[in-house]
Image (cartoon, rainbow over all chains, first blue to last red; front, top):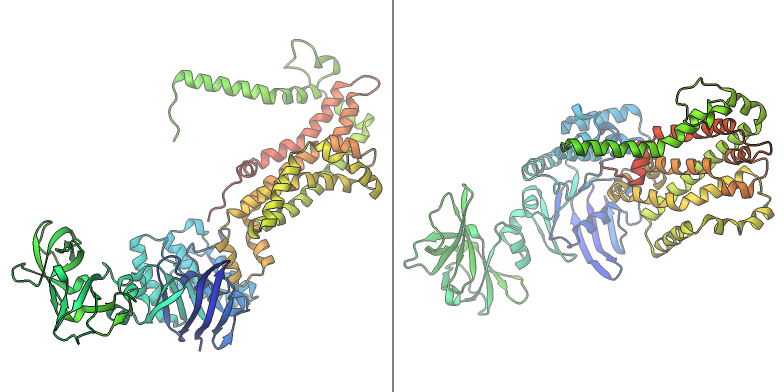
Amino acid sequence: MTDVRLSGVRKRFGRVEVIPSLDLEIEDGEFVVLVGPSGCGKSTLLRMIAGLEEIDAGELSIAGRRVNDLSPKERNIAMVFQSYALYPHMTVRDNMAFSLRLAKAEKAVVDEQIGRASGILGLAPLLDRLPRQLSGGQRQRVAMGRAIVRDPAVFLFDEPLSNLDAKLRVQMRAEIRGLHDRLKATTIYVTHDQVEAMTMADKIVVMREGRIEQVGRPMDLYARPANLFVATFLGSPEMNLLPARPAGSGFDLGADGRVAAPGAAAAAAQDLTLGVRPHQIALRPPEGADVTAAIVLVERTGAETVLTCELPSARRICVVAPGMADGRAGDRVGLAFDPAGLHCFDTKTGQALAA
Amino acid sequence: MRSRLSLPARLARGLFLAVMLAWSVGPILFIVMSSFKRQVDIFVYPPKLVFTPTIDNYLKLTTQWKGFFDAMGNSLIVALGATVLAGVVSFLGGYAYSRYRSRLTSWTAVYMIAVRVLPPIVVTLPLFPVVDRLGLGDTHILLVLLYATFWVSLNTMIMKNFFDQIPYELDEAAYVDGASEWQLVHRILARLTLQGMAAGSIFVFVFAWNEYLFAMIFTTNRAKTAPLILSELMGAVDGTEWGVLFAGVTLQLVPVVLLVTLARRYLIAGLAAGAVKG
């Protein structure tokens, strides 16, 4: 059982408190993604787990053993770095063998492990090349191979795909996830890309300013964000937010009209922020619609059409319509909000309100 | 990416190169050729470019100036010693300056460079009583220490540059792989800073091999280096035997020319504090 537990973990750099006090439990075999904007402390947290940063207070345990004061090599972890950090003067084989040789593994064991790892990652034809003779994707694979050969208890990934082009990133995303499904080792993966988080994770940890905003399965976070930050951070294009006020069985948007929400339990009669994802707004003819808007910008990707519209209050709202929707800049359209897709947040605290 | 030059431009470039070549290689050629000439032929005007070579000068050097070869031996010991010492110290120093940043290290870095720009004689003379007291006068060790010290400051900074170009993530990857700091340094970083080491070593070796001032002040007999004998050759009481002198100078030149030619790639990289790219 190689679970990873952090309790009351703190980190400061000089006077700056990067991580105030953080608790997190990662189960054995779980693929956990730490996600957040840059500077949110996710990389620092990962490096603390790796043993590359000291832990100022609190406790970190891996597989039930307190590891705060152990060096990286004593923690039985492997890490894949953003820049891959391959040893430039060593061949692919030697890069992968390095840790085993340091551990004085027998040659037969080294060869077997390299054979296994290169088989999994398709590196066999590249074993005698130097890193500079490899493409970005191949280097990425070697970095993973270097991690695999050691059979670590925990895999750590620090933004491993950010140096790859978009197409390769999608491919490697699937490969890393596939690798995890095969090896079933506990994995902690840091990224600022919410798409990576959504597509790869068993469990997402959304961080901001050193604190955990929400932890949960990707679709739970997407469907039930705990606060405005998570609501807007996950999902692309991001969730629309509108000031609103409960009114009967629905919400009053002021100058922008009203939204009917028959099933919604009437929240306390207070000002709130109504959130709705672009995919959960449908286009209607403007006549008789509760909310109308003017199209400002139309972007077609083929599979869907992204429309930026302006409401009467001059607030902008994003709508994603499936396929090639009609509409040109300047057209007036009616908007229908899916009642099941409405999220209510306390405007002051940003916390989600039971809807 | 070479642009095609017009004819006059090419001529001008050729001429410029010819002048530079004559300027830099001319004197060396004169010395080497003269070392194979008879005494009477050396300074005739116009100079003879075609002549019957003789090795008399070299024979005379071996018979009458045996001390020159002992001195070359001393030069070799001192130059190699200084190269190794400066190499080790500046490698470790460069590592420390690059990886352990603090106010202390940045302050000492300035100090090291400052000492380097003082005139050597200013640094040297106060050493005289110290050396005397320690009984290090006229020893190889003293010259090794002096020459190495003289270059450690600059070479440490050169090495720091090389280390700086190795991303710190590589250190971290090695630590995660289970390397100790020493294993990191000698199995990863040493290999990646070889160019810097080579360049730095050449600087020290050539300097120590050619150095005159310190050697003259601090050696009298046992540790005397070759440049001192060459100067004696020039000031011999029975008149300078130019042919013999040039033979000595030619021999003195050989290791330097060989070294610089063989390692010019590293030398240029060292001067540019070259890149170590993955």
